[in-house]
Length: 233
Ligand code: DC
Image (tube, rainbow, N blue to C red):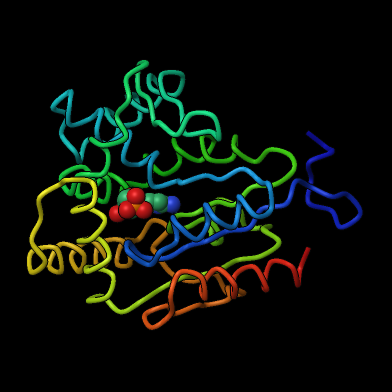
């Protein structure tokens, strides 16, 4: 609507974007940031994972753009993302949170995410979560493509070995078996695909504050991010 235009005199619902590669801690940090601010949180990767999961279930060809966009259309009313009251990700009323965390699903998500039509199909899904009083959105292209008018753009990163080790611990904690050497390979392959693709590649927005947290604890990273947020709000 006209009221939502980005003119300086109006005040659109504020968004803070947190982009970065897998294992950069962007999920944990954005959730904590949203909690501190009392804002909504969007984990945009879960949308790519949801679509990938459904595509795997239906044995779709993961390079078939029109089949995938048709599937996205069908799913748009069939899923729900976590809220404060219910942390589950649901598809057709079923809790699929754990299924979405597997490496198989992550790999499929990264493949379909390279397809431009898939990214366009998920744009409206993502922008729908921009709701009062504000949104913290994490992903790969939140600051560059989905919310270019964000009040603050953060780019979290860490060395690949550090990120693979974090991923390893997350999976083990969830009881998902895994081994570190192959995880490092998978993380590197996904990084290369996410950064090398033509459609919305993973990269810091021009004005992003880049935080390398390889040698920072979670509390220190959160403090840096909170300081940056309070400086602009
Ligand atoms: O953040 P994640 O690991 O849950 O994301 C899974 C995949 O989805 C990731 O490999 C790339 C893709 N993705 C994307 O292309 N753009 C986003 N905004 C979020 C995720």
